[in-house]
Image 1 (cartoon, rainbow, N blue to C red):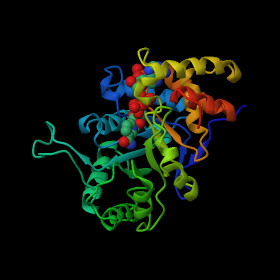
Image 2: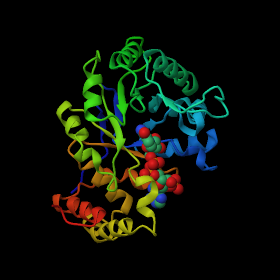
Image 3: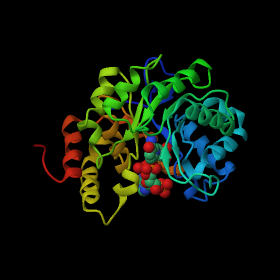
Image 4: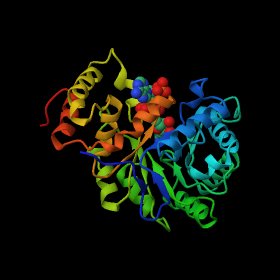
Length: 307
Ligand SMILES: NC(=O)c1ccc[n+]([C@@H]2O[C@H](COP(=O)([O-])OP(=O)(O)OC[C@H]3O[C@@H](n4cnc5c(N)ncnc54)[C@H](OP(=O)(O)O)[C@@H]3O)[C@@H](O)[C@H]2O)c1
């Protein structure tokens, strides 16, 4: 069955984004994308495919990826004007730039979130962030503190929407109770080898609140293509068997279609830095898996039938 790559809102109050987002975590791993010029070319490929949303974070690349993204966007104002940016804050680790930090820690106080968002605005070279996420729950920040920071950033026009990442359903509900506007997403790990969000209440809550989750590591960090991994092998065989029913769709397309088939409508955050793989991924939303095939990939990933 044919679907399509739509413009979406994470929540009715959020700006528009693309149904797939381009992730930037691993950009500095690959010398091909580690320069502003090379990254700009990759962003143009994303735009050609209808992928307009960049997912980044303060901590990526040892705090250097936001600067790279900002430098790439600065090279072409036309590209910059067509893209939305989602970034995250709240994880702080000691490294060469921050020798003053002794321990890795989460910090989601109001003041810390505001300081990080303002730094992201400077590095990315934008006036407002389309969405700003608390990267991980800070277990010792009160919900009043965290909400105060997000509310202030929205009020000041520095962020257009606020959300969270890696929150449990109860953490999401608790923070929501102190927000002046709804949290628009919970970005969590979701792929055939990490199905927790469909079991632990996170995706049920997203449906209840009409919030689209975002799915990070859609290819399980590359595990899906690991030829030494038995479960990955089963999944690839199942995809190969299904492919003919979906116009010859590739493994990555079928796995993305599997993710997007969940009724909470997750937005996969792509991890590849290869133009050809971005183009292939962009074809995934056209495929709507049948009920039986969705469970077929579940079975292949788990190695047993449904209970
Ligand atoms: N919120 C959070 O806590 C959190 C955590 C982790 C990640 N994220 C976000 O999610 C994004 C995606 O995560 P991820 O990088 O783990 O995604 P992923 O797509 O699961 O994994 C990416 C890895 O898989 C490889 N890969 C992807 N497609 C492939 C294909 N068709 N064939 C062979 N290898 C393939 C990539 O290599 P190539 O580059 O060579 O294709 C790369 O090494 C990140 O960039 C980041 O924006 C968020």
